[in-house]
Length: 212
Image 1 (cartoon, rainbow, N blue to C red):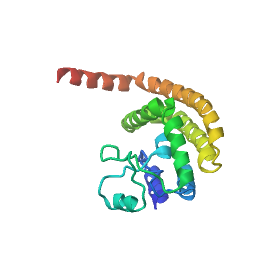
Image 2: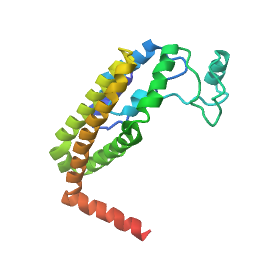
Image 3: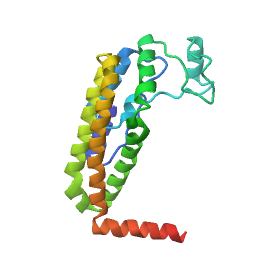
Image 4: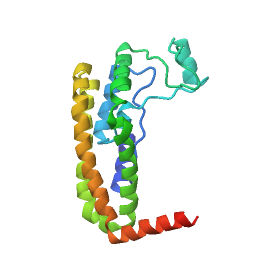
């Protein structure tokens, strides 16, 4: 299953950037709870995974099923394939909160993308220069685990407690916590870039780009 696959990758030193669909037109509070518990069990640290919504492509089997269920409203078009309705009213309420409050926060507008590229940078560099991994890996994982922990606590309020009023208050606190963690990760990135071998590697990359 997915948990076993992720463990096999981790045990063999393969970094996995998790793709995950949290919401679909037929989501219920129970399926959201199960998805939340899965993300917690694999220590997911990307905000994206907790709020990603299925893209409903026009005239697919699922599209026709949604149309029969009355979930294709006036907002939907092939240019806006995420603008379908939810069969569960509680899920619709949760999604509206995610869309208006969380997706507009700095966590999704900036930090999630920064995290994605920082993770790729760190693992690409550390796979080539093992001294980087030996020196910085524990600190990197400490910060990543801290991020996963904060996300678990925040999304528990939404997917388990269904307390959207509290979640709205907690977003600002989460933004501040993310800011501090991102500062720590960026400090670590600068330390990696100061490594003599890495500086030479990056310098060569820029030289190649300028020559092409």
